[in-house]
Length: 126
Image (tube, rainbow, N blue to C red):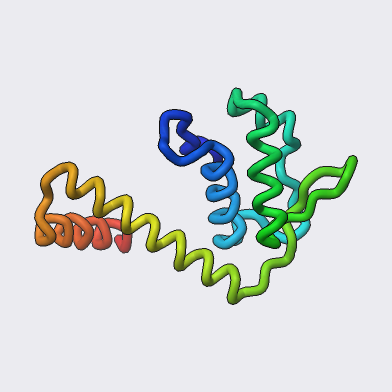
């Protein structure tokens, strides 16, 4: 789940972690009541400062995605379907922005990008 956390990214690590967890919750990969990795465990796996994980978890808690229980851990909260849909729409828009930025760096035209997307959509349907 955290394989795309990149310390070289201009996006702070805590925001990357929180974003990945938001996506997992919105997509239903993480369900209400599921426990998140402990702060110490996740910090160790990612080789980052535990305070970074704490910041990510606090952000998610303030947004209503998780509940932090003293001494027990951090757990996914029930998120209303409208909020999940809103988060999925936001993540889709972010994905498209990143795709367009990368396509621009590669010098792709809109037609070339549309063609590549259409080809991949055909492959994924098969």
